[in-house]
Length: 247
Image 1 (cartoon, rainbow, N blue to C red):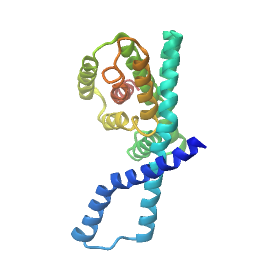
Image 2 (image 1 turned 90 degrees about the horizontal axis):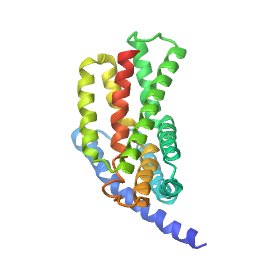
Image 3 (image 1 turned 135 degrees about the vertical axis):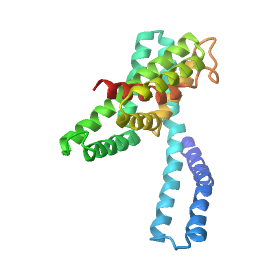
Image 4 (image 1 turned 90 degrees about the vertical axis):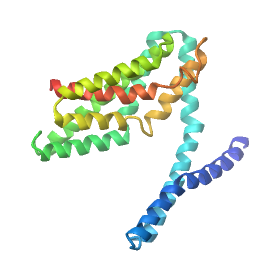
């Protein structure tokens, strides 16, 4: 009963916070629609209902992160650290990165759109099977790269390596590969790096890094616990461009 009593005030607080967070963008849209374009909103009640769904959904999503995903991610990381098996920890990190990325809605949408554009441009056959295969291969490459990125990030936490050297080196490699990669794949590669860090991947990966750094002696959650998301954004660009250059 105590948990349910505390849950309702938290959800109400999240609803108020979501309305405050969305208020600026709502005001911007309303200003340009009414003052600049000087047209009424099409289907006003549908827009209002949609905004209400967004507010409720955002509040429930944030509450779900705090109540479920963050605690379980930190608990798993701390459990692996106490177990002392580096191989098991790295295997879990790869599976977590791979699994969350494959299920990422933003990546599914971008891969599907990329397949449609590729078929229209004649890069692949204009057939459902070809588009599905193209989108699936793209998702697999990105998911594998994110899994490898989380492994690298976890290994960095274990060793205490400075993050800036790895990030700078990675972006130098991205810049060099951009020159040699096929132009058709460069934009997709850059977008793939952005869409991997979205609603599913970010909470679990962040919780993994913070939980692991908190459970290791000599590691700071603030200094060492964050940065996994940067690797998850960087490596898909490298792997997708490399895939385009090879295939």
